[in-house]
Length: 160
Ligand code: ZN
Image (tube, rainbow, N blue to C red; front, side, top):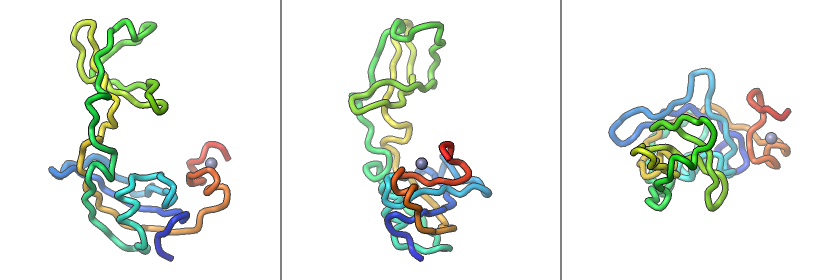
């Protein structure tokens, strides 16, 4: 069986940036499991894995456009500290959910200057060229439920 849309794929991966710094990797016991063609993973990686088989290894460099997108300066805003309600302590590097134009987005506090707080709604990996080292470890058919939900069911599924 080879990788194609609507199959459930298990992969081990190491993600590095172009300087070779490891940004993320799958744990030995826990491969990443996703549905091909369901936008579970970034488009560039889905494309690179298409038609591969179990045991195949790939090393692929993915431009931002095919990964987490380019950085959008309009998603960086300066807001007043009074926007943060309650006794929330605002610190550089903290992330929270905010309402974006197209739904909820995760924003990061990037700078604090007195009462002026700079928040960045770009994905932390936006603008990054990513290098993936991947090994395909399993391929199976998705169940009807999985295809309907658009995600994989299994040990980690929280809705039975
Ligand atoms: Zn589900």
